[in-house]
Image (cartoon, rainbow, N blue to C red; front, side, top):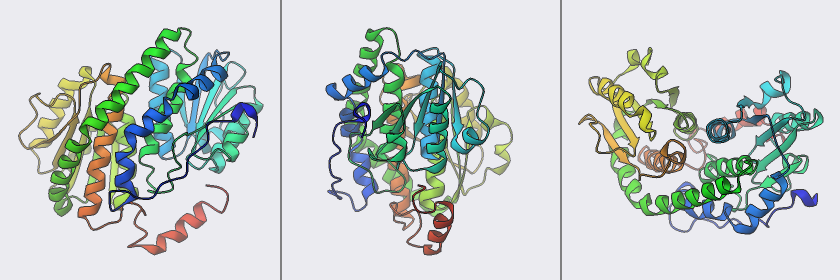
Length: 382
């Protein structure tokens, strides 16, 4: 491996320790995972590789969970770094490469395996066009990592299970954010970002027990009635809405649709039925009033409603189940991580209550689905 791509050694994955499924242990590992990504030597490596990068624009590439992680990183680039940033599905980027991919661009690509074919092709194409490429993967020996200008391997153990990529959703986002933050001209901004993320890890650790209790309670009811889902969020929480809609489809095998907060008010209400589960993500104070209005609108229907919020004392409808998040500084940005961990707890227990194994994406009850993956992802392409 090129010495520029060399990262800290990846420890061996440790099998389940407490929970009956890997997903449960992955959730509990989130705080440690975040803290591992903030190791001082690891951060020094990132800073050293990124210090001469001065992009005029940033492009982010991924598929599935990696695409959703890219959405969050792009939000940070636009709102914290004030650098234009756009997210592309890997196939779209490869076949319809956007204008501006040149020596003034930073291109960040994410793939959990590091072998996703079109993500690799897109990153390699961007590099050939003069862009500085950063690639993030759990596999330090992957094609994506090896062929980038800077291969950023997840320092936490490779998440072979669950297939839903639970804790690595957090690390992929954080690694991309760290790479982006290291182009900030002020080291004080970089240091402050690390301080705040460390506080977020502590807050997640302190609240996991509360979220487990809430997830169990809500899941015990929802499992009996919900078969369709809608999720909505504002700003960075739109990425969480997209991610957990995808995970509902993957883990529960049930339909889900994701919306930005205002988009959610334009038409979807016609589908509100008793079997519809609705999840609202809310941490940005600018969106609180609108989110309250939406919750009241949902409450007059028969749909089930969960609000994941750091404003638990707000005037949420009595019918809403509220999962409380801790207050963190700049909640419009850093509230992403606690909200994701809380939602992952809910999904985990909802799968268990429905009699599913959350680690295998319905293959236990629908083994014929393995043939679908074999066609979509031939050997070596994912």
